[in-house]
Image (cartoon, rainbow, N blue to C red; front, side):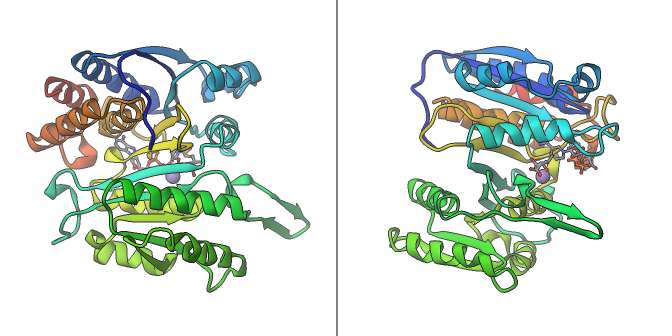
Length: 349
Ligand code: NAD
Ligand code: IPM
Ligand code: MN
C-alpha cells in the first residue's frame, strides 16, 4: 500500500467500541506511542464515544458531523470492535464499521495470516504460513440489498465490474511490490452464475502480471486446502463474505483471533480504518484477559500505512518475542492478563 511521508505527528481517531474493544485498544495505544517515540514520529489520539452504550443512550450511531470529521480531519481510524448482545441486529455496527468501510470507499480489507510462533498452529507440520487475504470490502452481500415478503427472504449479492477489478488489481499490485509469485482468486462460479465476473476479471488482470501465477479455487475447496497445505498460499483475493469467513479460518491456523490484524484501505489514498479481525468477545469482556496482540499488530499495519515501516517491523518483532517468552493470554493457552502481555510487548519495542 502507498504510505505517507514519515516524520510528522499523525492524528488518529479511536473508536474503541464494545466488549473487549476498549481493553485491547487501550492496551495497544501506549505500545504504539513507544514505537513512535523510538522511530521519531508522534501519534495524537482522539477518543470518540461511538459504541453500543452510546447508541443505547443517545440513539446515535455515527452522526454525519463525526463522519465528516473522520473523512476530512484525521490520518487514520483505530477501531476496537463493535457488537453487543443487547443489539442482536448489530445496527450500530452497520452504521459505524460497515458504514465507514462503504462511505470512505475502503475497498481493500487487508488481512495477513502469518504464523508468528510455531506452537501457535493446531496443525502438525504446517511449514511457513505467511499469506495475505485481500477481502473485497464495499460490495457483495454486505450492502444488505434484498427484500422480505411473506415467506421469502432475499439477500442480493452485488458484484460490479469496477469493484471486482479494483480488488483483483490491488492483490496483484501488492504481490508484485512484495515479490510474491502467486495470487489465488476464490469464488463460487460453479454455483453462482454471476461469479463469472470474478473469473473473467482474474484472467484479464493476470495477463498484466506475467511474473505472477494466477490460480483459482472454488471457496469450498480453498477452505479445505488452506487447512491441508496453508504454506502454498501467498495472496488470496475474494469477495466480502468469503473473505470474512476465510480470514477467521486463517486466524485459526495461526493462533486464533487474538493474533489476527486487519487494515481497511483505499490504495493510493491517505488514511484507512484499522481494526483487529476479532469482535467484541462479550463472554470474556471486562475480565482483563483479552489478547491485545491483534490490536498491536493492527497498530503495526496502521503505522506502516502512515509511512513508518521500520516501526511496524519493530512492533511485529516485539509481539513475536513476547509470544516466545510465553507472555500469552488464555486464548493461546497461557495464564497472562491483557496488561501483562501488553507490558511484555512494550518492554521489547
Ligand atoms: P469474536 O471475535 O468476538 O469471538 C470469537 C471467539 O474468539 C470467542 O471465543 C472470543 O472469546 C475469542 N476472542 C476473540 N478475540 C479475542 C481476543 N482478543 N482475545 C482472546 N479471545 C478472543 O466473535 P463473535 O463471538 O462471533 O462475535 C461477538 C460480537 O462481536 C458480535 O456482536 C459480532 O457481530 C461482533 N464482531 C465485531 C467485529 C468487529 O467489530 N470488527 C468482528 C467480529 C465480530
Ligand atoms: C469483521 C466482522 C464484521 C464483518 C461484522 C461485525 C459485521 O466479522 O470485521 O470481520 O463481517 O465484516
Ligand atoms: Mn469477521
